[in-house]
Length: 333
Image (cartoon, rainbow, N blue to C red; front, top):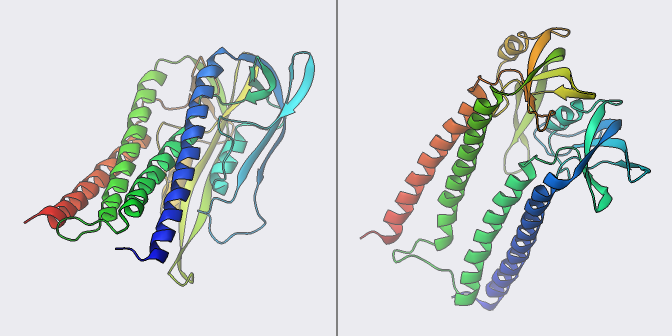
């Protein structure tokens, strides 16, 4: 049995997790509803006025989510000149400096862009109405906090820590469940990448020009429990950018293929990948006719989609083995 103090803290933790779960679920439903409603929104021309990364002057490691892309644009709706900075449904969360810079690169100052305007509210606008990254993140957080809330509530109602017949705490089963959840999300990402690869091979094409093909170096700190630095790891990515125009709109693409972005442990490998493109090089850009800002250079290249598939298989295997061991230890004879 839980003593009164531990029971109180369990009840408080269960309540907090329930509130967080309810908030995430509400935001998930609202965001999904907004993404469906965007289909009926009108489009108008906008011009990028600000494009920068908001970040602290210094930080300890490049894998920290401490940066945010700031993109402001001017547009006309309902006979009024307006400005806004919303990019995608759900707002723009903090992210790494590399990802923030990649987002900003797509919207250089002065570029003409499509602004999607809510017919009922001219201040409710988006640049990327189909982006689902926030939706996936909200879904993952909702599942995690929903599971935590269910476990803690069961403990609070029972007044004790729940165990299996062989004495294994029930909350221990959350660990393999989270691993399997990660595998499922990675598999979904792989399937999405493969579908995009097949669909984009039939998209219309337009001439584009490479504007940048550089190597980005990131320095990652590994720390111990005392928060002291154990070692620093350097990893590298290719910073590819290409400009193209569809109709009267200017676009900057950053995707070479679909799926996860390649991360290299050696600079030489990253330089070899970046060396396939040079600034000023003409390229053929495959773009989505419904959302021209969604583009790729090599639609048939499935390397990026294989990474999440391999990760999902490995994670699913680890999660299944962990779950089998927990079940055998917890309920076996």
